[in-house]
Length: 239
Image (cartoon, rainbow, N blue to C red; front, side):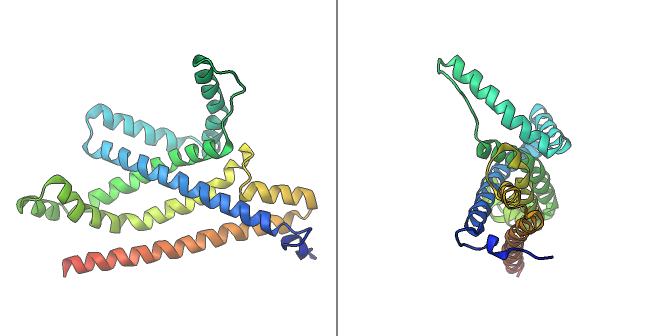
């Protein structure tokens, strides 16, 4: 099997630079979606743990819907449904069209909401993994709720949550491939364009796989370092 490796280079006919830019876009979308998911997941976990009954039901409904509906369908709903919402709001405010929603915004919102549903379960489980005795001990010595959370609950819950959060981050990275359907030029979209233009389908899809593998492998190293440091701090806290 002969490949024209020059197509992956940085020369006049090479696609190397545009593939790097597409990889950068994948990373940007992943970071934005993951952070949105972290915020939503934290709020949802708090609602499940300490919220009123109707708030708990709302949080449960959010996780059930977002975990039960296919990810690609959620992206389509945000991309096409978002256009209609923006158009309706714009028209109501007296603005003239056309109205649109970018693939970036639709992708970040959709993947962020999907990730938030999963992260809420991770954070809720991490909270319940904190031994009740340590929480009670903090209350006995007079810690307030904020101090108790900052010095007792959060460090122990974080140690438990980091491995699972790393898995969620990896899932977010891979889910960005789905937003190629919106036209956003991220890794999957760019390798599809390159493959169609050069007819070197296997080579460019293989290059796309390598880009994703590089991002996920480096991310795995970062999360492993974070996990080791959190465990070290946890052990020192018990020393």
